[in-house]
Image (cartoon, rainbow over all chains, first blue to last red; front, side, top):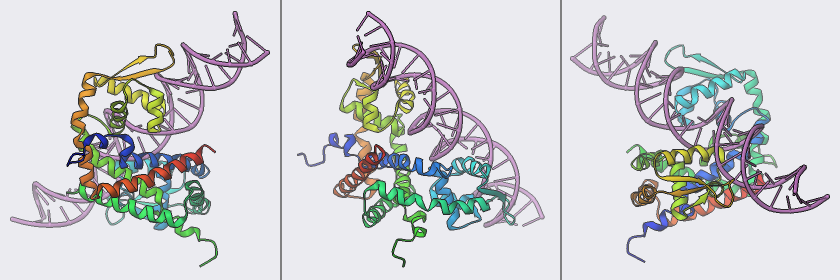
Length: 152
Length: 152
DNA sequence: TCACGATCAGTTGAGCACAATTTAATCGTG
DNA sequence: CACGATTAAATTGTGCTCAACTGATCGTGA
């Protein structure tokens, strides 16, 4: 009604895209949980494994950049993966500040069992692959703009 | 190439809508943080306040249903809001199993200061309101399908 | 009536997330 | 070459999230 949009509506929960994203993230997590339990992984651990399945022998920092997580989150997470026998962490030879994360044979083998996971998610989403790809691209673009705004 | 889509591509991080949602949620959180610090709230606390600003004197269970959170998350969160003087928690009179959460005058007053928050998010998103509304509706629909799949 | 199952909040334990700080190694500039 | 700045990881503290469980209360049917 007024020239400037009334802030009242903006404060309504159901109008907020942030809450939509927040609650969708939790919903994904809950759908993933039973699928990942078969692999003995949590969702963030699964993400770290995805990074390693794409490229092995990665410094912690690179994993953090891919996943937007810092060492405070990754160090204990990777120690748990190491305790589970899926990865090995060793100091970098040429730069001893870094820690290189490498898959063990068991870690590499887990990839086969993980193949069924995305299929299960696809089914639960009730979407076609094309719809999901389109949404994903939009959300990634939004995320990148948010992260860019943070750096300014 | 094959008839059925190869699972290899599905296991790539950048192809996963779940990771897009997950990382966008973190990006939102990081954008919110400096805005909410002025109110002395975390993002989940802000969500609880949004619920209460819409309807006061709500049982914990109703807040949980709105936010998709359980008592294990809400009980300590609401205790912190109570310690901050923003809400009061009292056992329900007619049903003593419930705990009714009510705003204090300070909690009600905080709503005015919160008016600036959504504007800040809108700016950081780099989107028009219409674009955000469209995305929000899509994400909510996806979330609801995921939650429905969980209940089956 | 009262016994039993359902419901609501709270508690505990494990794991994730980030801010702030620490430690160690490396880099860059004088 | 030395020394301050930077970088990588780890650590600590606070808070969120869920699963599993507890305890109290409620409602209903035998």
